[in-house]
Amino acid sequence: MARDLLNNPIVWHQRPTDLTPLPSPNRGAPGGQPAAATLVLVAVLVGLVIGFLCWQAVNQPPPAPRPEVPTITVNGPHGAVNLPDYPDGRQWRSWYQANQDWAGPPLWADRPYGTSPSCAAFVTTIVCWNPDATVQGTSWAIAQRLLGTQAMLHAGLEPDAQSQPAMVVASYIAQLAARGDDVWWRFGAIQSPPITIGDKGIQYYQFTRFEWNIHDGVADPASVRLAPLGQLAVDQGW
Image 1: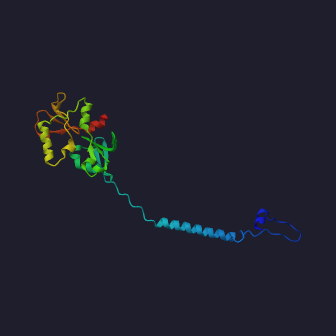
Image 2: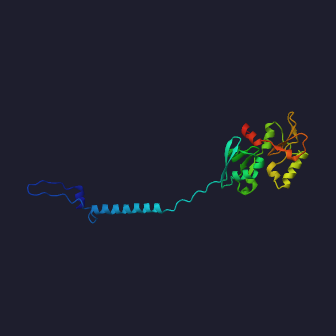
Image 3: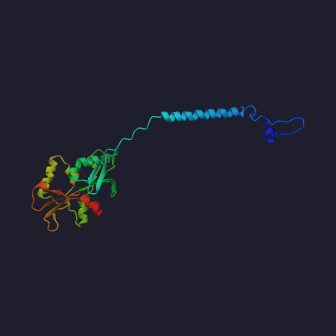
């Protein structure tokens, strides 16, 4: 019968004596709940779900605060430079604070240089982060680029690994080693005998990581000066 009703809906037939009404709109399928009651039940369930979701959202614990990255800002020759300490080992702030007496002010930080993804440039050097897990926590996690060798090659000179440092340079290295400096990490191998360029009376000493200069004839190790190879590399696009 229900199928007949669906396929042949009842319509009004006007007769002189009576009217045959349509079925009640509140009746659903046989054996089911009335349509209005069903709608009310659905609305109640939807309201309960929405209420639960709102309660859950309100009562969620707040997200853990993101720890701030320790950073210092240092004014360098090219302007202010931020030096952050990242938790993955790119410790630019800490490296600068430990080595600023010879590295000089920063030029930029946390940029790629050559094939290294993250480096920092200072007046006398450029250092790069090594992501190798075996060096993390050591001084080699942030190591210097071989700017002394690069400077020689840019000048058209060939490195000479058999060179011996002049006495004043050897004395300077001995002083640093005596106070605990890792001179190999800091300077690398000597690359040239004393080089005199022009008539300025200055001798240049090339190491793999640095270039030193001193006035000709001066024997005081305190007179040894580091060349600004980091700034030259940045300004000249080595």
